[in-house]
Image (cartoon, rainbow, N blue to C red; front, side, top):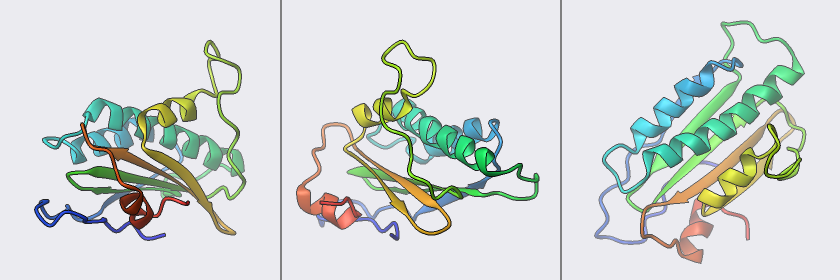
Amino acid sequence: MPLEPAVTDRTSPTPRRPAWRALRARPSEVARARSFASSEVFGLPFDAYEIGLITSEIVTNAVNAARALCEWPDHMSPIIIRMVVTDRYVHLAVTDPDHRPIAGLDQGGQLAEYGRGLSIVDQLAAARWVTYDEQSKIVHVVVAADKVILTDTELMRIGVPA
Protein backbone atom coordinates (compact mmCIF):
# COMPACT_ATOMS: atom_id res chain seq x y z
CA MET A 1 0.00 0.00 0.00
CA PRO A 2 1.46 3.40 -0.90
CA LEU A 3 2.51 5.64 1.93
CA GLU A 4 0.46 8.80 1.48
CA PRO A 5 -0.15 11.22 4.30
CA ALA A 6 -3.68 11.58 5.59
CA VAL A 7 -4.41 15.27 6.10
CA THR A 8 -7.56 15.80 8.13
CA ASP A 9 -6.90 19.27 9.52
CA ARG A 10 -6.51 22.08 6.99
CA THR A 11 -4.60 24.14 9.57
CA SER A 12 -1.90 21.48 9.76
CA PRO A 13 1.41 22.18 8.07
CA THR A 14 1.95 20.38 4.79
CA PRO A 15 3.34 16.90 5.46
CA ARG A 16 6.93 16.29 4.54
CA ARG A 17 7.47 14.26 1.42
CA PRO A 18 7.95 10.54 1.99
CA ALA A 19 11.54 9.56 2.75
CA TRP A 20 13.20 6.20 2.23
CA ARG A 21 16.48 4.29 2.44
CA ALA A 22 17.63 1.00 0.97
CA LEU A 23 19.51 -1.16 3.44
CA ARG A 24 21.83 -4.13 3.11
CA ALA A 25 21.06 -7.32 5.03
CA ARG A 26 23.72 -6.59 7.63
CA PRO A 27 23.31 -6.03 11.38
CA SER A 28 25.31 -2.78 11.05
CA GLU A 29 22.48 -1.33 8.95
CA VAL A 30 20.20 -1.22 12.02
CA ALA A 31 22.13 1.76 13.42
CA ARG A 32 21.94 3.50 10.04
CA ALA A 33 18.16 2.99 9.93
CA ARG A 34 17.75 4.22 13.52
CA SER A 35 19.73 7.38 12.72
CA PHE A 36 17.71 7.99 9.55
CA ALA A 37 14.36 7.61 11.34
CA SER A 38 15.36 9.75 14.32
CA SER A 39 16.60 12.54 12.06
CA GLU A 40 13.33 12.52 10.07
CA VAL A 41 11.35 13.50 13.19
CA PHE A 42 13.87 15.95 14.61
CA GLY A 43 12.15 19.18 15.67
CA LEU A 44 8.67 17.67 15.41
CA PRO A 45 6.36 16.57 18.25
CA PHE A 46 7.74 13.02 18.42
CA ASP A 47 10.13 11.30 20.77
CA ALA A 48 13.10 10.68 18.45
CA TYR A 49 14.40 8.00 20.82
CA GLU A 50 11.11 6.07 20.59
CA ILE A 51 11.02 6.39 16.79
CA GLY A 52 14.62 5.12 16.69
CA LEU A 53 13.80 2.23 19.02
CA ILE A 54 10.79 1.17 16.95
CA THR A 55 12.88 1.40 13.79
CA SER A 56 15.66 -0.67 15.37
CA GLU A 57 13.26 -3.43 16.34
CA ILE A 58 11.55 -3.62 12.94
CA VAL A 59 14.76 -3.36 10.91
CA THR A 60 16.50 -5.95 13.10
CA ASN A 61 13.68 -8.37 12.31
CA ALA A 62 13.96 -7.52 8.59
CA VAL A 63 17.73 -8.09 8.59
CA ASN A 64 17.28 -11.43 10.38
CA ALA A 65 14.54 -12.48 7.93
CA ALA A 66 16.62 -11.53 4.89
CA ARG A 67 19.72 -13.29 6.22
CA ALA A 68 17.70 -16.44 6.93
CA LEU A 69 16.88 -16.63 3.21
CA CYS A 70 20.44 -16.40 1.88
CA GLU A 71 23.77 -14.61 2.11
CA TRP A 72 23.34 -11.22 0.40
CA PRO A 73 26.27 -9.65 -1.44
CA ASP A 74 27.20 -6.11 -0.34
CA HIS A 75 25.99 -4.55 -3.59
CA MET A 76 22.40 -5.69 -2.90
CA SER A 77 20.05 -3.83 -0.57
CA PRO A 78 17.02 -6.09 -0.05
CA ILE A 79 15.50 -4.07 2.81
CA ILE A 80 13.66 -0.80 2.27
CA ILE A 81 12.60 1.59 5.01
CA ARG A 82 9.99 4.24 4.13
CA MET A 83 8.61 7.01 6.30
CA VAL A 84 5.86 9.56 6.03
CA VAL A 85 6.05 12.19 8.74
CA THR A 86 3.27 14.67 9.47
CA ASP A 87 2.58 16.85 12.50
CA ARG A 88 0.12 14.16 13.73
CA TYR A 89 1.79 10.84 12.98
CA VAL A 90 4.72 8.90 11.57
CA HIS A 91 4.02 5.99 9.22
CA LEU A 92 7.05 3.71 9.11
CA ALA A 93 7.10 0.80 6.64
CA VAL A 94 9.93 -1.74 6.41
CA THR A 95 10.03 -4.17 3.49
CA ASP A 96 12.11 -7.34 3.52
CA PRO A 97 12.38 -10.18 0.97
CA ASP A 98 10.95 -12.91 3.21
CA HIS A 99 7.26 -13.39 2.46
CA ARG A 100 6.72 -15.85 5.32
CA PRO A 101 4.55 -14.71 8.25
CA ILE A 102 6.38 -13.13 11.15
CA ALA A 103 6.64 -14.92 14.48
CA GLY A 104 4.14 -14.28 17.26
CA LEU A 105 4.52 -11.77 20.06
CA ASP A 106 6.47 -12.05 23.28
CA GLN A 107 8.16 -15.39 22.79
CA GLY A 108 9.90 -16.30 26.01
CA GLY A 109 8.50 -13.76 28.46
CA GLN A 110 9.87 -10.50 29.86
CA LEU A 111 13.35 -11.87 30.63
CA ALA A 112 13.93 -13.45 27.22
CA GLU A 113 16.95 -12.18 25.31
CA TYR A 114 15.14 -12.48 21.95
CA GLY A 115 11.54 -12.21 20.78
CA ARG A 116 10.32 -9.13 22.67
CA GLY A 117 10.79 -6.53 19.93
CA LEU A 118 7.26 -6.52 18.54
CA SER A 119 5.84 -6.26 22.06
CA ILE A 120 7.94 -3.13 22.57
CA VAL A 121 6.76 -1.73 19.24
CA ASP A 122 3.13 -2.43 20.10
CA GLN A 123 3.45 -0.56 23.39
CA LEU A 124 4.72 2.57 21.63
CA ALA A 125 2.70 2.50 18.39
CA ALA A 126 -0.85 3.52 17.58
CA ALA A 127 -1.02 0.63 15.09
CA ARG A 128 1.11 -2.15 13.61
CA TRP A 129 0.22 -4.50 10.78
CA VAL A 130 1.90 -6.59 8.09
CA THR A 131 1.14 -6.88 4.38
CA TYR A 132 2.43 -9.74 2.26
CA ASP A 133 2.93 -10.49 -1.40
CA GLU A 134 4.59 -13.40 -3.18
CA GLN A 135 8.10 -11.99 -2.77
CA SER A 136 8.15 -9.87 0.38
CA LYS A 137 6.44 -8.53 3.45
CA ILE A 138 6.02 -5.00 4.73
CA VAL A 139 5.77 -4.26 8.43
CA HIS A 140 3.84 -1.01 8.94
CA VAL A 141 3.93 1.01 12.15
CA VAL A 142 2.03 4.20 12.92
CA VAL A 143 3.14 6.37 15.82
CA ALA A 144 1.01 9.30 16.96
CA ALA A 145 2.63 12.61 17.86
CA ASP A 146 2.80 13.62 21.51
CA LYS A 147 -0.68 14.40 22.87
CA VAL A 148 -2.37 13.27 19.62
CA ILE A 149 -5.03 10.60 19.43
CA LEU A 150 -5.55 9.52 15.85
CA THR A 151 -9.15 9.16 14.73
CA ASP A 152 -10.54 6.01 13.15
CA THR A 153 -10.89 7.99 9.91
CA GLU A 154 -7.21 8.99 9.99
CA LEU A 155 -6.12 5.43 10.70
CA MET A 156 -8.26 4.18 7.82
CA ARG A 157 -6.76 6.79 5.44
CA ILE A 158 -3.27 5.78 6.51
CA GLY A 159 -4.13 2.18 5.59
CA VAL A 160 -4.58 0.50 8.97
CA PRO A 161 -6.77 -2.58 8.47
CA ALA A 162 -10.16 -2.46 10.16
